[in-house]
Amino acid sequence: MLLPYFLDLIPERLGVLFGKLTGWRPEHKRVLLAIDESGDSSLKDKVIPGTILSVKLDKFGKPSDAVFKPDSPLVYKEKSNSYLLLSPRFNGHGLYRLLITWSVVHIFAINNPEIANEMMREDMIAIGLLKLENRKHVRR
Image 1 (cartoon, rainbow, N blue to C red):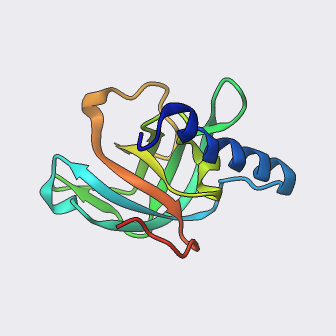
Image 2: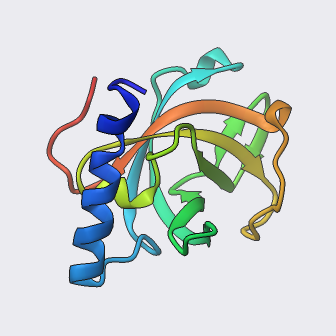
């Protein structure tokens, strides 16, 4: 979190409101995934364009985890990954936040586009920033 907790929730809540008013859904949206931290130094500072294929809803019916398909497979520790699971790193960094700003996510390599029920922390390959591709500002 970059702001105090209650302030950090504001972009997500504004995004939910805007999404409900406009009918916006994250599925099939073009996004950019910028990797900040990874166990593989070749991924550091890499920006990966791709598409959100599907989402898993949280207990309140909001999209939380997302299956991301990079435009080209991501190579992590010499293994090619065609799909990634993106999970919010912080409370308030869900997919509706993308309508306002960027979101911090945990990145997991997965073998197929079906969302796994439980990902273990040791399965995480990176931490990154997610934003809509058509947004003009980039935090870098």
